[in-house]
Length: 129
Image 1 (tube, rainbow, N blue to C red):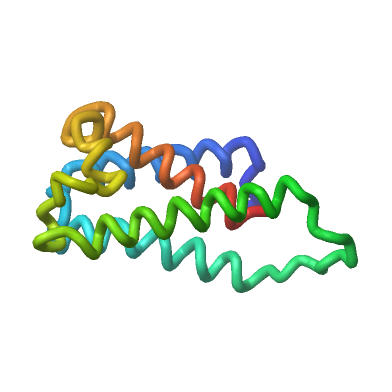
Image 2 (image 1 turned 60 degrees about the vertical axis):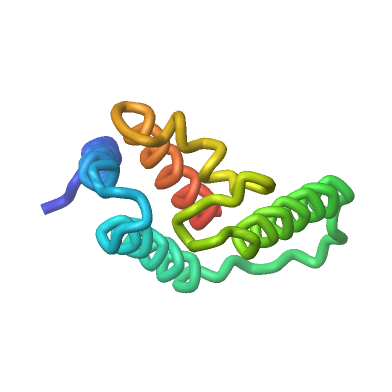
């Protein structure tokens, strides 16, 4: 049986929405939340390793270098904030992590579901390219 691309896309969106809905019910920093994050990460990593695009012989653009520097700096700040926490699930008031700053938005309800949908979509788009 051949499934049309439009139907396949609709099924994928529905599956992602269902997964995000179930995952958004988990408590932060719980075992269920860790598994809920690990499953899509494993899927995206497996997909990205399966397809290796041909690397063109083009010099790196300056904007790519600039965005890489911004991403590197943000990663360092996030790691420093994480290391300075008294415990892995207790934020340091002096230097909170990004997840702690976003906690009022993502603590529960529809915004948590939307955050999960956005995170899943961003990961899929990055792996697809």
